[in-house]
Length: 418
Image 1 (cartoon, rainbow, N blue to C red):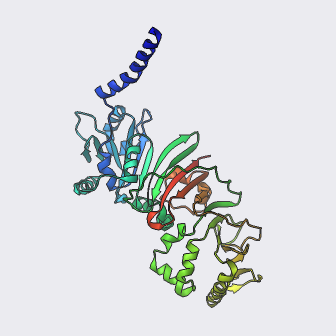
Image 2: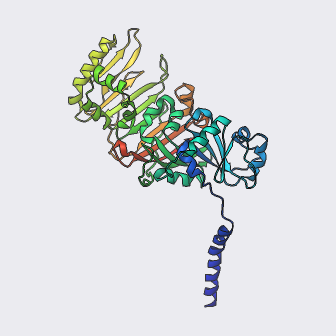
Image 3: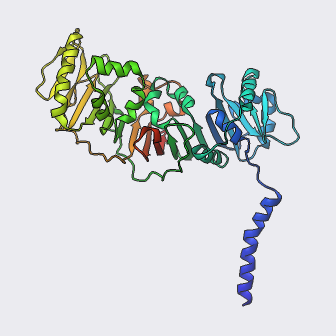
C-alpha cells in the first residue's frame, strides 16, 4: 500500500501546489474591459510577443515611455476604437503598480486607456460616466475571450467603418466576436455573431464540416447561402431602393419575400477586356420557377427598353442587353426550371450550372481573393492592410434561426497571406 499512498500524495501535490500559488500570486486580469466593452466599436486583444521595439501604436501613444512600459507588460494588451472611430485607436494596457498614468491616459480599474488626444480622452471619460448594463450573452463571452487570448469584438459602427458602402450587405453579423490564431502564413478564426446588439442567446454550436471548394482561376469572389435575404435584408432597409424595385421594376412585396427566401450563389469574375473591372453573376433558385417569374421578366424587359437599352438576340430562356453605344451590360438566363441567372458586365455564362439545392440550415460561404480585388480597386480601403494584401480569404457562417430578429451565427474562417 505504500507506493499507492505515495502516488496519491504526489498527485495531490501536483494539483494543489499551482492552485495555492495562484491564490498567493493571482495572475492579473483585465477587469476594466467589462466597463470598456459596451463603449467599443472595435476592441482587439494581442498576445505579447517580445521584441526589442514596441509596436507602432505603443510608440505613437506613449512616446519615450513606450520601451519601459513594453518591458513591464505580461501576456496581453489591447487596441480600442470608440463610437467615434475617426478619433483613432486607443492603446489599452495593464497599469503597472505605483506609476503615474501617461499623457492622455485614463485609469480604468487595473487598466490604462491611452487615447490619441486629450479631446478623445475627455470624450471617453464622459461616456464611461453613463450607466451601462454589464456585458451579457455574446458580449460577456467575448469579454472573457479578450482577457485570455487573441480575439476581436465588433459592433455595427465598427463594421460600418471597415466595410464602408458594403456595410448594408452584412446585416446578419452586426455584432460579433472571433478568436484568432496563426498557422504559418495563415490566420484562422472561429466565433459567433448576431444581427443586433444585446442579444442574450447562448453560444451557438461550433461550425463543422469541411472546407469549401477552391475558387476557379477566373473567379475573384463567390458568396453562396440558403437565403438571399442574407444580402437583401440591409439593402431593403432603404425605402428609396425598396420603392424603386416595387414601382420602377415591378417587384411586388410578395415577390421580394420569395426572393429573400431563395437559395443563391453570387460570383464576381475577371473580365479580359472592356469597360468593367469585373463581371457579376447572381444565381437564385426561385419558388414556382419560370411559371411565376416569366411575366415579371417580360415587364422588366419593357422597363429596360424604355431606358434605351437594346436587346441582343437570345431565345425564350435568355436575354442579353446593350446600351446605346453597343456596350454589353448584362442579362439573364434560366439555367434550370427553377434557377435564374442574372449577370452584369458580361453575358450570362452559357456553361451548364449545377442547380442550387441548399437546406434552410445550410452554412453560407464567402470566398475571395483580396489582393486581386485590391488591384482592381474593388475592396473598401478601410479594410486592414493585412486583409487587402492576402491571397485568399474564406468565411463561413451558419445561422441558428432564419428570423432576422434572431439571426445568430456561428463563424469560422481563414486568411491566407500566400
